[in-house]
Image 1: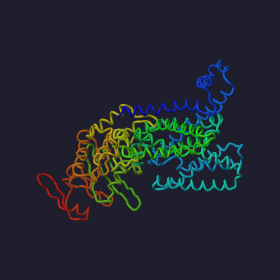
Image 2: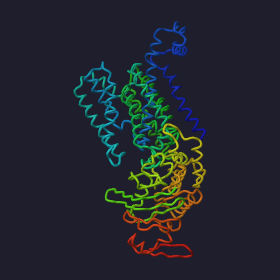
Image 3: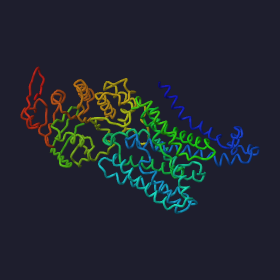
Length: 335
Length: 252
């Protein structure tokens, strides 16, 4: 039993590597495996560059590699922030978007795309409004007696408010900017390039790394506030730290990739079903499984049809049935 | 380490706890009894540092509790809540390990020594070998023991238990109180416990604190202070104290 679980954990940690290799190979333009390997190593061995067709390098380095790295980073960011927030709010149904993050980001992006035009990067405005929405939710719910319930309620209400504002902007938008906006709202990993990655990757990696370091503390924070306090935890400081990190990585991920739903809820749940509730395992496993999950979803989204399907749709279409299946199968062992 | 209360006035909504002077002695089991709403839990939470206590009213040894940082307080005093209701189903071993929080810095993991300490606490409460079981599979009696084990893993001189026997059957009630007794006798801990069952309080406690309307109605050795008049004043119903074969029974 224990060996089987250990094997499963190893498999999860290993899966991003395997998928990385497979994803580099996948694509409408088939690059033979030896050439692919040579292209990938050509920056190290310049001699190999000469024998390869010119397009290979730009396909591998210009198109596939940034997309794969983005999928891995965004998938792990959403999953890790989901796991951390679930522990912090003592509720396995919380996800990063319950804090109003996605609707804030959606409104921010729409504002930018519609009024500043598609040439101006919508990421900046998306990130700003994601943070604004979270701050709004936290400041409204902070004064309440039962913070968790009021937080969830405030999250729903603030989300609804920003969604209404988003509809208002859509109402005034031209069909052309509306197209760009829809594409962004559904989550798309094809658009961002190295420059987008360079901006958001440091935030994502830094935030994920710090949350991984905090993983055992998340166990303690998942106890009732009273218990955590009696164990000597400085709740105000540590809660703020976790929320700030989770918001930072989710906002940074959402700003470049658009709204990709459900990963932050599904992945930590899958991990808990397989490895138990201890966040010492849940957080790093969520990072690995989340990375694989989104990369797999993106692989399917881009190889299923001759045109691009936004990956946000796929994470929901694959994720939710998978989640229901596992929930039914393991509900006894799990709850 | 003894706990001293001096001029404590703590108001919350329409309730005021007022204790001019009270000492909980070192390495003794003190039971706090009294009717619902008398202030038992409020007193316990003030002591446990869960409610913001005013300065110069509560002292651990000779140090002002309000001036002790939270982390240090948690190394001196452990609070055992009534029920553990986590949304996450931790294994017993993982749960008890959380008692080591005051010894583990923010960004690090508990060490093997911490794990050994948790394991030892698990054995002390009689649950050795149950470490891998999920907490939610434990019976409510076992869960109380797990909570006490976590407090024991916290390695404090003082343990504060909030109604540890409520909703337990007689066997588990005895188990929990035997355990509290052993903490005092074998480990020299100072144990404070709120109880409703007066028979058990008389039988297990070294000292009794009787609360009524936020004030101390009586304080001392159970055999010396318990009278039928005191019980009538406290609970407002007549009760009788019967002594039989060296034991004391309180009946309605």
